[in-house]
Amino acid sequence: MSIALIIPDRDLTDLQQRLQQALPQTKVEIWPNVTEVEQVSFALVWKPPVGSLSSLPNLNAIQCFGAGVDAIFLDKAVPSVPIARIIDDRLNQTMVNYLDAIVSHYRLRFDRFSQQQQQQVWKPKSPRKLANICILGLGELGTAAAKHFVSLGYKVSGWSRRAKNLSQISCYHGDAELAMAVAEADVVICLLPLTAQTENLLDAQAFAKFKNDSIFINVARGAIVDDQALIAALNSGKLQAACLDVFRQEPLPTDHPFWQHPAIFITPHISAVTNIESAIEQTVINYQRQQQGLAMLNLIDRTQGY
Ligand code: GLV
Image (tube, rainbow, N blue to C red; front, side, top):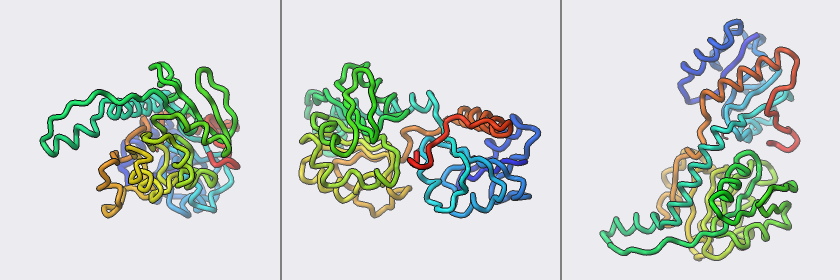
């Protein structure tokens, strides 16, 4: 039995060595340099190239190297084996830290002062009043973020596909309740999984439901947002700013209008980078469970796509 690491465009030497040390009886190899494809029973993947997983005839399980599994399903022929993802308090904390910093950035008007600096303008202004925050997506990361903002005294609403009940958070669900979830929000944070249902969910109609002058933050996936609709909402003044960490195409192409837009702040998909220690721990546990015939931890529901 062997494990294949299918994580393109990344130096995997360290990860391979550490997994090999933790699992001395099992060969850990970096795809596509796999000596015997028939031997691979377990794959650790991030954005696996189309066809890579189906090239492993005896694959029993897939462990995703991150929280979001959407890139796995870009391959329509993904073998029908269980798929697990990373669920990690350290990852939640990284995301919470990022969101905390970004909300403070806007509250303290750092966006405005940064533009003023370019023009050598000295013009103090008191903080923005950001009292209500809406979190779209109440999964692991969304719930951690919602609880964090509640603990800071914000009024928090949340929206998910399925009904949720979380203390001190006004929970809404389903298409019909999206408008209620965002209606009062000064800041809307997208933490939804990317699925067939959420692709292009945030289009012109959806942005029309946002509170006037609100701020939008996307730390989920770029394809949940209709790029042109976002630009139109910013240009019309419906939204006053957007912070984007994720994009339809990454790296964001140099000619994409987001780069030059004065109301858009861009970060290069760094809001919640997988913690390598956690990834190794969870991979080892899930590999061993799968060897023992036990269900892996943190399984996704393939019918839901997350
Ligand atoms: C990062 O985007 C992740 O899904 O872990």
